[in-house]
Image (cartoon, rainbow, N blue to C red):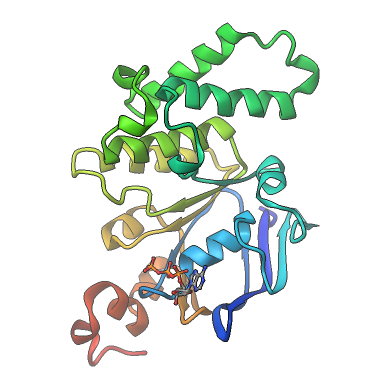
Length: 256
Ligand SMILES: Nc1ncnc2c1ncn2[C@@H]1O[C@H](COP(=O)(O)OP(=O)(O)OP(=O)(O)O)[C@@H](O)[C@H]1O
């Protein structure tokens, strides 16, 4: 299938430090690409540059060939780039349901402007409740977002992303801070999105078993540069990856 998201020589420096350096990479719908690398490699910064949370110093971000580089985060989200919300940016005092409803409302207003008059409150609440079922937060629908336990807040972030229905999903350690019982639900949801075949998924993940289970492809960043890109089995054998996941000692003697 054709390319959806592409970065061309994407670069940002903070003072003298180049956090992401000339990263060129293209992503296709129906694939999940894991972005891996050691701490401080630039993975989150790369996501921030793609989503527009951070302006780049150089290079381009394209979606279906359209150059989004000069657009801010909100415009990129409207174009189809979905980055998990940070709950602090939302409405902490509003209930779980209200938060999802607001995202749905925004989507219907922008995506279906002509239909927004008949897309009633009832429809919005039904759709929001379906999403809450998907993320197993139905029982917490009336709880203020700020009082949720951390694991549930992470689930809500995923729910808000689902509500946006983006074309490109950017998941940054989606199960971090979740218990062993909670993580499978989120991973199953990501697997489900992948099976739709029309969505492009990028996943920053430190847990090797999650990467092995979900990724079609692995891209490795190290010191801000793309140092490897390929099939999981092949990339997992690389020294830089083994160092990042297993520690330097375990990687000694491995092929570079
Ligand atoms: N806003 C910023 N200002 C200055 N330096 C920054 C900023 N954001 C990130 N950095 C630096 O850029 C580098 C890359 O950080 P980034 O968080 O993207 O790495 P990462 O690969 O996501 O790491 P981790 O796996 O630990 O989350 C680090 O050296 C970090 O200190």
